[in-house]
Image (cartoon, rainbow, N blue to C red; front, top):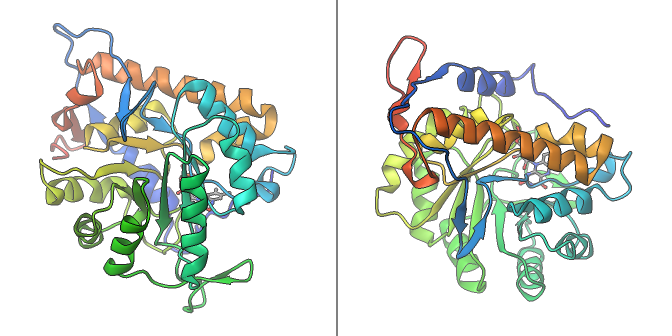
Length: 310
Ligand SMILES: Cc1cc2nc3c(=O)[nH]c(=O)nc-3n(C[C@H](O)[C@H](O)[C@H](O)COP(=O)(O)O)c2cc1C
């Protein structure tokens, strides 16, 4: 398995994200607490858990031991009835993931050539993607210039661009890489169906932990919001998932934590990891008396010094 870069010299983003999760304690609320259900409704369809796969790409490099790692993790999502995400790839590769039957959200890069974006959106819609979106945090590279990824230049996306993508597709359109109230509100104004609160595995040095900004985003978007809020980055257990859901996320993606199982045992390894996380999430929901996802309550969460998280 190829090493996945941890930017530990540039702000320890991954470490701080982990530490922030671990700084949150959970109250027990047991009187009358019944066994919880993880059933989730998303964009009109039913799933067995709010834990999703991540927008992965380049698995021929990072999981080279597996002939077709993309299809193996997509098949795991399909068999577990959990939402699947994929990242940068050709339309042909994406089609292979769709053929597993997984309901798949396709994240497209913020290409400077907008035709590349529209072409992939059109293909996704024609070929049965569950939703489509863009990772707006993969615009800049480490040299201060726009990033050039496998020969493709990236560029910034305006609120109007986002609005145009929303209008151009019949699929729910999501924006990945939101780490501020400002960007979340811009997405809401653009009519986006969902945002992913994420630092994309530390693209920016000293990026705020998604969990730290999540409550402010939830509050700013308001109680009547239609837009779904997803969270990723260091969701390594069902306990992490629980904390994010309690703080207002509608669903979460588990990323690198799936990689060892994927490399070692393929589809079965990913399924085992997802099943373990689902069990941990259900256990936390049981102990806190949240029988279902709509009963999650942020007031069970406290920092080490006793302060409530919200
Ligand atoms: C090998 C690899 C490839 C990735 N490719 C993409 C991608 O193409 N598009 C994207 O939006 N995110 C991509 N990501 C970022 C993940 O979707 C996720 O945001 C990140 O890994 C943080 O989650 P984690 O801490 O659970 O791994 C990739 C991550 C990894 C490790």
